Length: 107
Image (cartoon, rainbow, N blue to C red; front, side):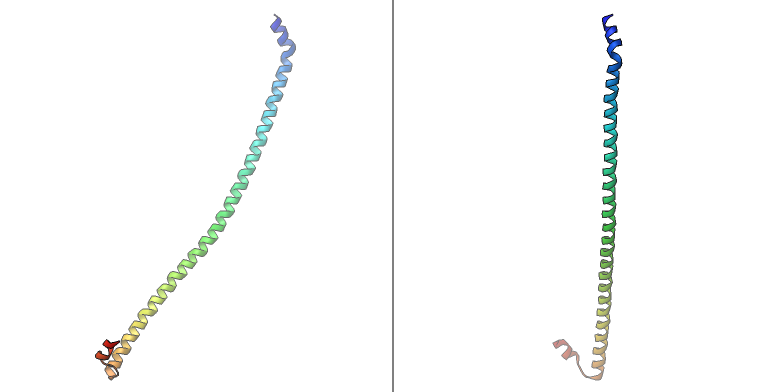
């Protein structure tokens, strides 16, 4: 009977205090969620900016590589053309008697 009297006398206040603690805990947890979401947004923004910058750099490097490959192909083609021209000039010089096979072998 005494416990029942104590509960009736102090119980509502205990529940109010407990509810206040729970509400404070909830408010703190909600603030923590808001803060974490803000941090995630900032992190994602930074990641996106870094990826965009990397995409620009990768595009520049890819173009430089393509330009280098094209330059090498152009140089190779020019070398083949010069070799063909040299061979034609040697044949022409031999036909005109300007050079002989013996003089070619000395070079």
